[in-house]
Image (cartoon, rainbow, N blue to C red; front, side, top):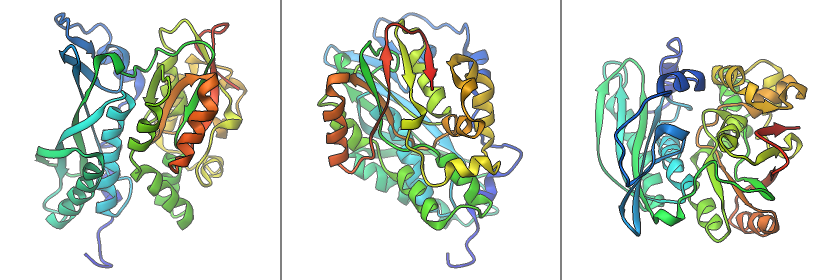
Length: 346
């Protein structure tokens, strides 16, 4: 495709076309929806879990998720790899193993050569091969904007599912990737990000959460989620919802990628961060004391972010050590506390 290659990110500039719906709109759309009772349905859309889970045998459940979005970078292979890693992440966050995937494609065939789609698919297949999952089909539609992602199926023992709001008191919150890639991506589009930090953000997004999940299975994980579009604090809110035990995140311990905080100070803030702050801040005690720029970092929408897992405090050091042995930039960023309710940040 050469030096005259079209920039993929120019196809995600159409007045928010392809942007993820905000949490408030989703809550309004899903609130009160009911479906017929099925005793084998373990997890559905009622509690913002990362995947749906359905029991097929006493020792086997299937998990299912879907995620797709416009390009976050201009290289089609890299975009395909990131989109696949992002979709696979939901399965790992449930403690499950991905097995199959189908692709979801929107493509402007009159504007982009079909070779772009082939490169996107090659990047996705690279991630699937690493995940030991297979692509079994897909669906394509014409659109004015490129969008790509996967519907992923996985398997897990029904007794070994990681839910997102089942942590207990006296546990550590462990984050397996730094945050801030949304801010770096926004700065990169404005030609304000350094090549080094842009490469760091792309590498983080391309990395599967497979290794992190495999390491964490050796520890007593009580709850887990992956940090994606609602930002670190947004997804932490979901972990604290309907849980009688509170959680505290120490903002000084949260790893931040590149110059994300400086980009926030310069106003290079993705639209999703404003949406996340607008809706989720009311559920976070102490956020009003945060520096405004740090607030945007903590609510920054992530693509293919890390896992946020809870393990007993006495296992935290060993878990972090084991994760780092695998080259995973893991950090303990907070704790759970039965004397508190809801999510707190300091």
